[in-house]
Image (tube, one colour):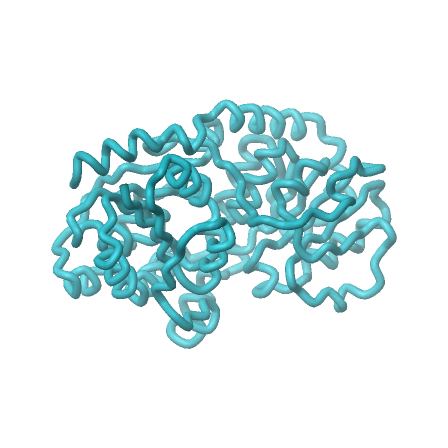
Length: 375
């Protein structure tokens, strides 16, 4: 079986699909990932990747073509949902030609597309093969898909596709207790993937005192800056904990002299780091949120746009963390992360729930049957 995965060109969208890709490869199937820009990082998972938008630099593309939509999506008080749909549709349109070309060359038996990148559904429809939607967090996919498709009439016409199915099979990796009314389609364990690395010795050793992971993901820090981290550092010296700033390749010199209980590590796999932590402070990206839940770690989430408000709300509603603004980040809130037993209990319950969910490998046989049945 040949399976084409289609994803929004960003790490936070393509990485959640890696465990299923591994499962298919382990079962002997061919897998190709169609993406671009930052999403090309998925090649380091040992996968074959097609760059369907050579030269695309995501931030510059949006700034140059739809700057007004970008501002509305990044509203710090909450994104404009329709602006997000229009932004997604704009990028889908830009990349659909390359995705269809890749699909026609690869000739997949099945297309798996990440939930907002319905250009994969267009390619599947044109080729006459079945498609499956792969969700990546707590944002529900049906309305997003339908609204995005409604913006892509000209794109579909360009490829001779007159309509797309209103209902599609869906893979949902959100823990069932955290979504209403219930998971969409096939409910599968969210297995965190953060790329490979040679681990530093300190992350394999038991910390001397409670450790708190601090990250702003792969995109937010370049958009919103280090403001939230600066507020956290101001509180750090008054909290008996070790703070690990996992901020990636970011210039942290603006943070000035750091308290002795603050460690800057650049980048370290969150899957491993979270397992050593008593808490996490982050931006609310789906991958980061699920990595913390997978480790049973209470969270303070500082959502700053996109689906992050949805993720933060789901965690707070479950009692496994707190959704806050950067201005609310103070000593009292950080101490609560370490001392709130109800929050710690809820986080542990979700960790155990995730461990009981079916693995991505459990889907392989069902995907084989779907591909064999055809469209």
